[in-house]
Amino acid sequence: MTLGGKMEKKGAFSTRLAFIWMQIATEPFLAFYTLLLFILRKDLNATPLQISVLATLRPVLSVLSFYWSANLLRERSKLLSNFMGAWVLSFIPFLCLPFIQNVWFVILCAGVYQLFSRASIPSKMEILKLNLEKEPREKLFARLYVIGFIESIGLGLFVGKLLDFYDGSWQILFAVAAILSLTSTFIQMKIPLPQNLKADENVLPITRNRLLQPIIDTIYLMRSRPDFARFQWGFMIGGFALMFMTPAIHIYYVDTLNLTHDNLAIARYIWMGIGVVGTSFLWRRGISRFSINRLTAAIIFGFSLFPFILMFAKVSIFYVNIAFLFYGIAQAGSHLVWHLSGTLFAKDEDSSKFSSVNILMVGVRGLVAPVLGGICCSFVSPQAILVAGFSIGLIGALYMLRPSVAIPSAQLKQRS
Image (cartoon, rainbow, N blue to C red; front, side, top):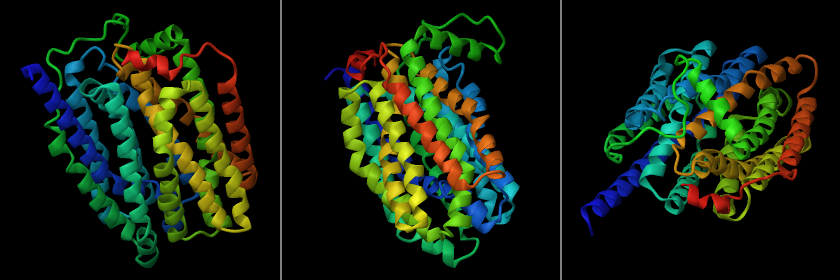
């Protein structure tokens, strides 16, 4: 084996090791974080306004996340430092939670996490693209997600009971989980990158200041790649539906269904985990066999079934479990397609510019959807908002199924 081959093999091994430990170490934190809106309502008596603020901040801050990585395509040597900086900053505020019990401080912690966890995605995916070929990359990414949800299934057996029995235990759990996540930085330092990384050649020259240039780059990319633009609009409609329902769903859990921490933990960790683990392999196979438009339509339709089934939970709480099962199936596809879309569309270009647009669009829809959903909670019942979210989701799925000049994922294999 040549020296170059040995270095490439070592780089692939180091990358796999780092990503595997990152997933294992971070899953407990992610599991607790998904319950945060419920915790705010259940444990801190957060108002609908406060729930709406957090539901809005989480996606809106993606706009700022977009700027964190906006210049990576011109300064690729900073990929690793960009990623590690965002990783560390995302967890630091949660170390203070055991000492501060305040709704607005929790919202601040969540906002900082959302800002920097999203900011790390473009550099993370480009590092993965540089060090692993397409097939191993997709296999690793799918397996990591499955590993995470296997962890979450185990967590679901005791976390909910712990939160119900010990008031305030969630604060300690968040801090411990944040420390565990931060241990990943010691392995991230050893991820190698190719020497002499060049700037992406298919970008516009800098003509504006650092605030406007990334927006100009995004518009140029969307206009020059209508296949990518269509993908973005489909996710925009489906994501809008989910964000619109967010405030109403958590009010529905607490005020209408009177769920306990254990009820929601079992649904979120175990039943959603079964959906993810049971279908991630199928979604990974689907990336190579079906067009990305069809996959996106299936994902949006799966998410639409979530509020539809939740409406039956007034008859039996067991339907909450079934709703999360379908959410898990859709989430498995969404996680793979949304994160890997940059590497699929990128050709030989820098994938970070595609991933950055994904993040920006999350922020754009987050400016409107959760606020609108929170306002609607003051005028209509949570069930009415669930019906509206279901309907919007169906529109998004139908949009992606309309005939168009779409590039099948199978043809995109050669692009990365």
